[in-house]
Length: 325
Ligand code: UT7
Image 1 (cartoon, rainbow, N blue to C red):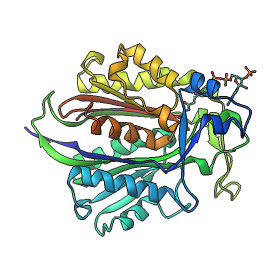
Image 2 (image 1 turned 120 degrees about the horizontal axis):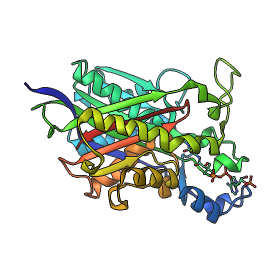
Image 3 (image 1 turned 90 degrees about the horizontal axis):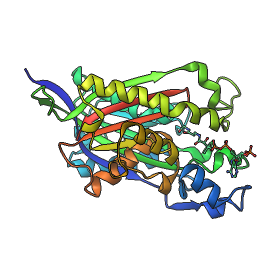
Image 4 (image 1 turned 90 degrees about the vertical axis):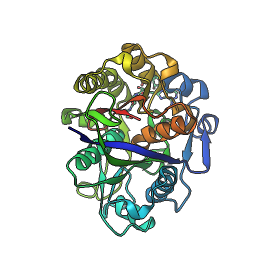
């Protein structure tokens, strides 16, 4: 009996032109290139231009993914966009992307799970594909975190950046065995008791302002490896796979130390880990598709290989998804 699986057809990404280096930041707040590189692995981040919105970044990444997939925008019947920095409180940024791409059919909505947003979006899109609700889906992660940073707070402003990444997935009948391509399993978790560890101190229903990002970095760090390991274990078990089967580990790009510690825990050598955090900092929901696009385009990730995605962020939320490319 065949099963319907969400197979990745193409990837795309976009980073704004303006690069902000650690040295430039050290002239703005009391920090140094050494501190930032040692504690986070970040060397630079990209900043959206005035008048350049999350939807603009998302549209660029989505166009690149469609072109890479060889799929016309007119075939897309669902746009799922993960972001914590929408253009406006409403409508969803996804509908602006839908309009920018000239898509007049199907549905579009945003997903809000902060840094875990892309894993949540992939899981949601996959569920809708397997239910027969959608066939060809654009899954996008896009953020303009530069707009919600407190540029006088050195504990947060050095860590984040702007960017977007996208994948196109298509529902394809597969044999229903271990060699199936597509999303094989995923695990999502959240625990709102930790909501004050990473949040924005504003919003439409509270202050009526946009607010600024606040983070207890050490506290988030303390939970990170344990939480993501738990969902990775779950995703492996659900697919009947073991850590040794994994060809590529593509984690959320927040901090090189968290990535290294997680990879060590599962016995994945450096050669199997995709790291781009040095180039763009923490771009929240955009970071996994940005990393996927780099590794797919440079030929590292090949069709048939097993890829583990993982993220954790504000909420706290966390999740993992296992897919065969
Ligand atoms: O994507 C969502 C998930 N978020 C994350 O994954 C972030 C998780 N947290 C982290 O990545 C790390 O906790 C940080 C990179 C934010 C910080 O690293 P840390 O090793 O946990 O440092 P810390 O917060 O314990 O701070 C160490 C010291 C402090 O000084 P004292 O109290 O030891 O005197 C800070 O005040 O470093 C100081 N510090 C800085 N120094 C220079 C904090 N920020 C800076 C800075 N430059 N930018």
